[in-house]
Length: 130
Image (cartoon, rainbow, N blue to C red):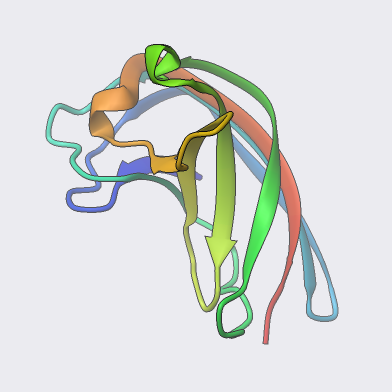
């Protein structure tokens, strides 16, 4: 798996880049741990995790959420009321979108400006394929 920007993916350098999955029928259980050691300055746009093994099932207005067990060195807007990260996989998608969440604030996509040279994330979740 990789951390990339939506507009320009960039080519981060990683100290840890692990992803594992188990597929049973049309169900995919996924875990990954990504730790960066350098950020590509060309990275631009909303942040996402790419490199999923399968495209998610096509379901209108639906997404799968992933549990983030660990995160570090992402620049969350704490002063704006954001205190945690979220991760979702949309319908017919191959990337997990990253965003910041808080209390009484509108969820906001994380962008390349929120990514540091040493950002790291570990997440797990389940999704279905066609």
